[in-house]
Length: 109
View 1: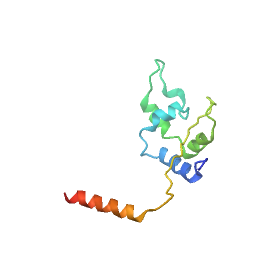
View 2: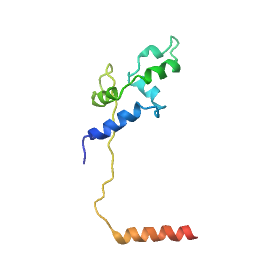
View 3: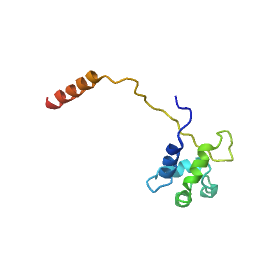
View 4: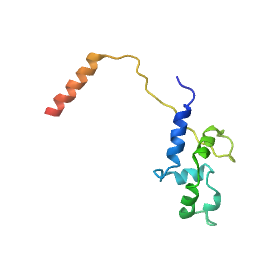
């Protein structure tokens, strides 16, 4: 079993989370203290225009540091990647061929 998420996986997610494709992450960046609390208004609501501008400034290096930070430290941003995987331990060619035939027969019906 793998105890540590490989560095390449962490780097991939750090780059993805800081790319333009990551519209969901502004709230998560606020929760992780990666965005200054300046985005929170006096009444406790979030100025999302400001938060989005601040989120665009978060770098992949910031995410990588958050992956390494302890969860218990409330001052330092932290983020966890949970590493789950399936491991192929045996190959059954007859089972595979049977599944393919079953799929084809269902497609014909």
